[in-house]
Length: 160
Image (cartoon, rainbow, N blue to C red):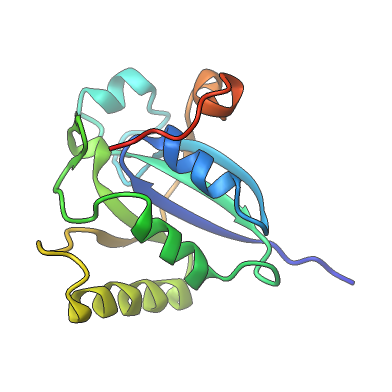
């Protein structure tokens, strides 16, 4: 039996808690934190935090679509952050903390658009959803000390 893996990439504020949330899901095989959506090659944490690169803190998710669907990942994405705050999650402010879905192909793009439209139509949030839906560009892994940051330190989820 061939095990076909798929990739999803999301930005939902500080990547530490978002990574931990997705890493705990059945069917998620690996996660990594990094930077996506900007114009600078090989960005580092300091340059991304400066706001000069245009990158968002993002989470790369390697998942088994036979065990967890992209739609299920989208549901977790919407629940693990506030998609109505522009360039902000809790105390973290800046474009690097924006809410974004970086799709890998047109199927993911359409599913992302449908899930966002369904949330808007049902009035799930009292403010407009500001999440962007963009094609995935180059994912630049963050520095090693950011990878599995909360898990390595035995800390629970960040709260916003």
